[in-house]
Image 1 (cartoon, rainbow, N blue to C red):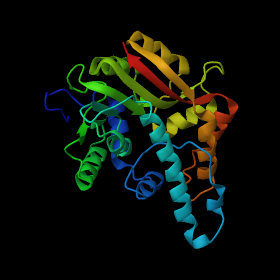
Image 2 (tube, rainbow, N blue to C red; image 1 turned 90 degrees about the horizontal axis):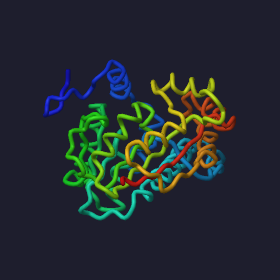
Image 3 (cartoon, rainbow, N blue to C red; image 1 turned 90 degrees about the vertical axis):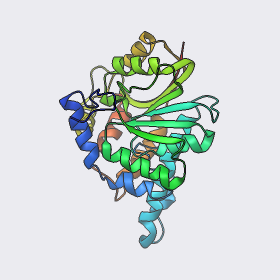
Length: 285
């Protein structure tokens, strides 16, 4: 079994191994093609109004127009998250929990100059992101680690900010927020953007079950987020419902060559009210 330098297993369950296997093998064009636009590989969804004119015009350039527009929307989502991290300075250290191929980490460093540690259980994604850091000339400030976000091994109180961008559905929130609370200094900021099921709707809908099966994840209820944040000294300062803002992204993606077949499930879940796309920012007290 692969271990960290302090001999703590990175992958502590068969489920985590299955998730790691999935992302180690993943080469989805909807992630790779969008990242090729400007070298920021985000691995998440988008928000904002769509420029529907990208579907018109010459057929030979349609794919490029669509890719650029989808990437613009996912970059807008990342910018929205980073803007909630608080006033960061170059001497601050921040963590991208579930960092994927590194898009949000590079963007945070670009916007604030801060030091970023990305954490992922996918060895192939960590290697890809570290190569990107080297090519960008920021490997002295942006580093990626093959570690488990539930037990990182980083020093207590060493981070000014931590975020999860669509990665909380792969872990138990009680364990995740306990580790984040340990890592954040007092007054530090935690931010996540996530899909959660709406308690007011009832149990998870059929569409949510389809999403879980597609991504090998377990979408949590909205109430679970706030219960576990409170239990771990993370006090919400901002909660933004981005559901309406993300629907246009899915409507565009469903009409493009990059559709993966899961688009209808997302649209059904969002439009039925059973699924919500939230940004939550909380301070460590």
